[in-house]
Length: 316
Image (cartoon, rainbow, N blue to C red):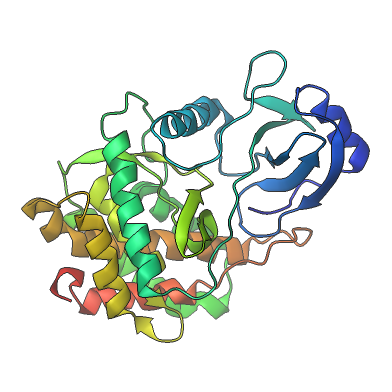
């Protein structure tokens, strides 16, 4: 989450008149994140999140994201519920941009990842995909290997010499992955962005998941690879074996990977690392000066990619 579009009290108060959720009491911008503008809004009824959609979200796909969250809530999965306005729509317009209001989720992100947290996350990933593998919702993964390459080409063209050490590694990895990317693995709707700031905890238990705007239908094992990279590596100390073991314990309590998925996990983990590497590189190079959000360091995921190039995650 982040703040790119600035709003004042009057603008938010006027927007809330289109809903039956009370009058504005207070609001504050949420700095974390890199994609959309977010405000925590407290009304006379309750607390909510107001999201204004910015750069990478295709607004035509917003019904998919809203319906996904509704479906998850209906299955007992803890995530925000989109709020309908007085016309019965969950999607609105604010400052000529699409905007939604969703319920506020209690809890907070953890600052220090421990094995017990990773077991919780593994269990959650399994429960999530167990729900969504039979979903009728359709959205292809727009952040696929072709998009990684497109983003990287833009970085190469407009970047600076600081990132020269990244270029050869990324070029070679793109060639490798395009030749070796798996096919015909089990699919589900995946979250595709299960970082620390998108998973809330209360008393060491997951209280809910937020920020579904990368969600799409893709390999379940790819979701697992993305999440392993986010939760089982430390920027200072690299691969965290205990966290990985605990993550897989939680996962295996609710699902089981088949042999094809296990064999593909190493390559999927490399791809998952490359995806975050190139998007972080892009956000570092093209960071808007007016944005409050601080872009994340791409080097963390360069290191994760290099680890996967030298190690097979399934042999750990």
